[in-house]
Each structure stands twice: as C-alpha cells, then as structure tokens.
Length: 212
Image (cartoon, rainbow, N blue to C red; front, side):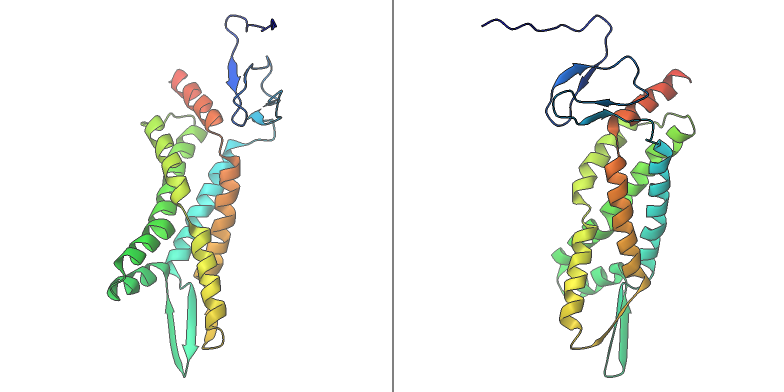
C-alpha cells in the first residue's frame, strides 16, 4: 500500500514533539505558539509565556531556600527542655550518631542539589533576560537536566511531616520558619519546572549570540 508523505520545503523549520516524537514543520508565525498536530502537546510557547517570570521564580526560590536553611525547621519541647534545628543541623547530628550515609543523603538531596539547580537556572536566565549569552550555556543546561531528578525537597518535607505526627504525643511541636519556607520552596520549584522550556532558552541564547 503506497503512502503519500509530504516532504517539508527547503528552509522550513522542523519541530520534534516532546511527547509523541512526531516531526513536523513549524508554522510561519511562531509568536502565537504551536501545538503538536497529533497529540496536542505545546511545541512553542504562546504569547502569554514570559521568560522573565521564570527568572522571578528562581530569585524567589533562592530567597526562601536561604530562609529554609538558616531558620529552624521544627522545634520540640518536652519536660521543659526545648530544642530546634535546621536542615544542616539535622545532617550534622546524623553524622555525629554514626549514620553518615543518611546524613550525606539529606545533605545532597535537601540542600546541595536544589541550591545548585537554582544557581544554574539563575546563571542561565539572568544574562539571557539582559540580552547576553552566558558562557558554557550547553554544559549548564545539561547540568540542570542531571540535577533536577535528584532534588527531593518534597520527599524530605513529607518525611518531616510524618515524624511530626509521630512525635506529637511525646513532645510539644513548634513548626519553624524553615518549615514554612520549605513549603514555599516546593511551590516555587514546581512552578519553575512547569515553565522551564529548553527550546525557548536555546532560541534566546542563539539570538543573543547573533547580536553580539
């Protein structure tokens, strides 16, 4: 059975769908965005997309990330004895109790990886928003993709909440500023991940390089 396959015209820009891998020609006017003709996945951002919004989310994420690691996550009071600790303090106490693998896991997934990912995004977005092409753009983009699956702030926060429920009948629990900051950080990271568009960043990077 013969099939009619329409070949794209010379010079036509091709787009590959991220969901169904269909290769298709880009529309002449891309300012209004583009959707996959087979699965409806968004291929190009529409006019409502603002790259500067991602930059604002990253800056806000860095702010609450600092707050989450400076202020105590939770405080406990039992028999007149009060204690409170930060996430870094928790990793230190775990290491002092000879539980180094767990301490290292908390440090990597709760502190280092989210912090490094936010710094990488700031390194990419800030120069592009100002019209400059950051050096090492491709390497930092690959690093962001590698780091993102290892950021497990939400898993850590879920573990804290479960622990608080179990400790509620043994001691008086006082949620700290760090705990609320972690809530805000999770929301900001999720919002930034939903808006992260590698294709748009590459387009902006190439445009900035062409105007140098």
